[in-house]
Image 1: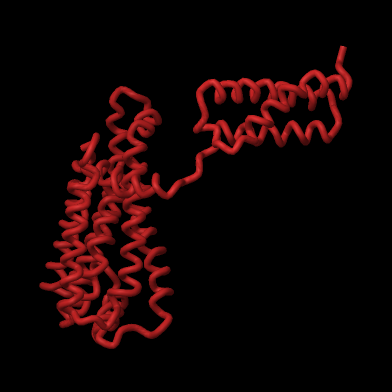
Image 2 (image 1 turned 90 degrees about the vertical axis):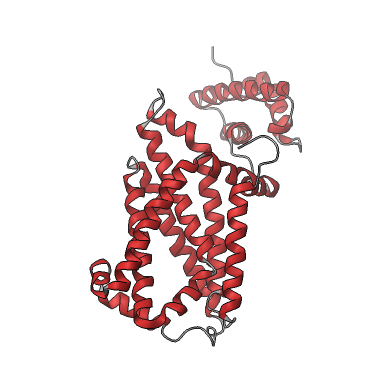
Amino acid sequence: MQQSNDEFVAANQGRWTELDHLLGLSKALHRRDGATIARVASLYRSLCADLMRARSAGYAPDVLGYLDGLAGRAHNALYGAGPIRFPALMRLVAVEFPRAFRHNFRFAAVSIGLFCLPCLIGLIGALTSPQLAVEVLPAAILEGMVDAYSGGFEAGRATGVDAGMAGFYVYNNVGIAFRCFATGILFGTGSIFFLVYNGLMIGTVTGYVAQAGYGANILTFMCGHAPFELTAIMIAGAAGLQMGYALVDTGGRTRIGSLRHHAPDIARLIVGAAVMLVMAALVEGFWSPSSVAAPVKWAVAAVLTFLIVVFLAFAGRRGKGP
């Protein structure tokens, strides 16, 4: 015999109230003892059964609304992602990211080669024969780059332009890095293509502008943000290659299982690369086009390059980890 609405509420109110109380405590569920978490999980399962019974019986809307809301709160407490806390984010960037980089350096080394070798080929090719550069990029784009760097940056940039350009650089750089990473899902082939393509394009543009007589201008502009930007792109490419490798050499797991196994390190690499791209955009937006003397820019670039190398090579070595 089916219970009435009031009988149903009276029979189960105690469990609902207990669950409501446990969810309302100030301390987050994941920070409580195992017995409390297990009790919440048990009450949540019972609540789900109660909710199904209430719906099938057609009980009052206020009862259904209460149970729906309580079930949603319990589900979020048990299965929802925890909030991102600044100390955890700092540890991820300052410790776990460089550790993951060193632990997976073979992918980084391949990524560096796939980017730097085409970059060098494009640079030398454009320096020796401008016609070769036209085979890589349209002449209109190359001439536009020559025009952009022909005047130098001794006068700086117009007031108010830097912030807008920094936003553009974030969008552009993240797009490049995302393609280098995300297309790694195609068994690594997409990452290989975009690393080679971007390296060749950057080298070609630099060589073409230098061949036109403005090499000092473009290199002085690039030297400040390139340590962050190019390193981040190659790290993103390394993450894409690792993802592709996980699909090829599964280590006896399913492909999904292999991706899950490699996912933590891939995620650390991507987060670290993203932070570096934001830093690159800020430098490129505000510092690179400034009227600061070229020797100062080169000195700062040398310091930044040194710090990045030291960071990737040694950060996070204290304690457990590579």
